[in-house]
Image (tube, rainbow, N blue to C red; front, side):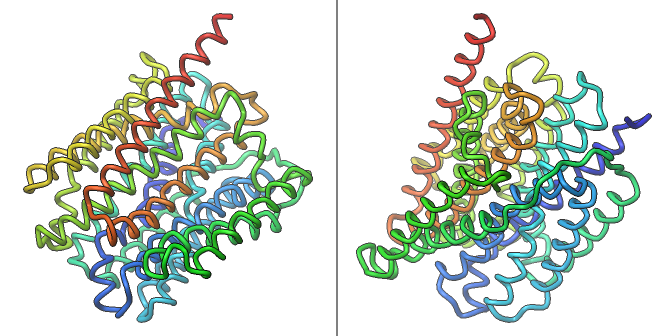
Length: 442
């Protein structure tokens, strides 16, 4: 253990925040990129989806590599890929190159589970809930901060990605200087076949959803992609059950100690990205806002996420993780419902963004603890990796669904779908908490 471990937590929290920035920096830029690159909204939306999708595959793969070769080493590799992807995106002048850069940036998504593993090695047990809560809450701060960063550069995507390059490089240096790794290593080998299968079925599913409205929901191409997604997904499940060290432990998805956190994480990730992408579309559409104004509309979300992350430790000493996730999800439901029925002016966006920040701050701060508190220590890394994975998959699905719904149904329907996802998250978390409490009493 470290003599003074809080600098380690601070450096890792900064790395997680920088890794999360890349998930949302393109959200307010989608209409601008559509104009500059001469592509449709559903095509440009892949600059968001590609980064999230890459992260969904990288989370279990790099988490496993972290167990095998050291979490510090793999964290540095993820940050190096973030720097490379940011530089490529900054220099790109075509949609294909920009998407390629975003795929490299997505490799930073596993920084949270890697950081959680590192602090578990460094901190005494009674300090872990607060540290994990702070790390988890920085996801929300990074998500909101990405929107602010895009606004501060005035919509100049090249400048934005150069800033990301610098932040990634700084984080790389800090982690290399401050963080140490445990000499304990896991055995086995990475499941590269599983990573390929997961990538294929997710791409097929998300491409069908994002392009379904343009191609036709009953067109051969759309239906073919959906059938391919189902078939490849089935092959992946079968092979994962037969592999000694699978990319994702299928039983962990349905483990009674983690299923509540798994479902809540998926739904809360969907609700967050569904809400912020629709707020961006409304602000730049009916309100005629600039990219900077979009960032300002979401400033309450970012600020309140940060405030809640500071209070995460004390809160988790007074309330269960499931209760905080449920309460946070309920607040996100209120925010999304607010915008479903009332979005006549900037005051509605500001107020809903504040409620959204409170809800996401509470929910994200407690999800990391909720995912691992009811599993045996040997399964902690697997549980944390699955939780992070489903959150990113939910976010990816929100990007694809949002583009489709906005094109066909409008902002009201998009906000309503996000509200429904958040409400389901609140219900699952509450039920999971009650069942866990009964098990402890028994």
